[in-house]
Image 1 (tube, one colour):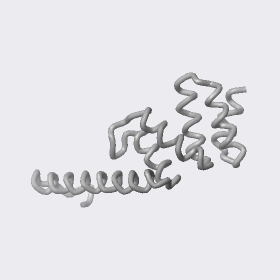
Image 2 (cartoon, rainbow, N blue to C red):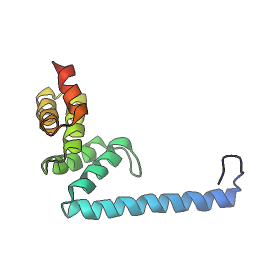
Image 3 (cartoon, rainbow, N blue to C red):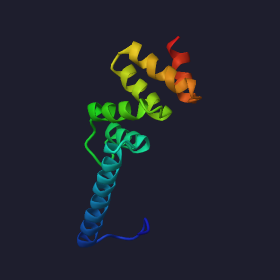
Length: 117
């Protein structure tokens, strides 16, 4: 649908339902893969919970999924886990996870560590 076209209530409702169903399908597929140990799925599920995309925003759930991926050496998950710890003022844990990500070459984690010093 182009930005200039109008959406009738019926069309908009159908589009909204389709979009929501697709988002729920994506979340369900990610959960299945994450529960089977897929680090990338765990990371993306963590991002969805951290940002409230496709699911209700929930930092505890985000931290759970980031932690599983981080222990599998997913540098992005390690960085975001560090960020959540940093935001929660758990600086020792933040440094731990930023360091693990930085050691894998994660630039944002390196910058975060520099900012902490």
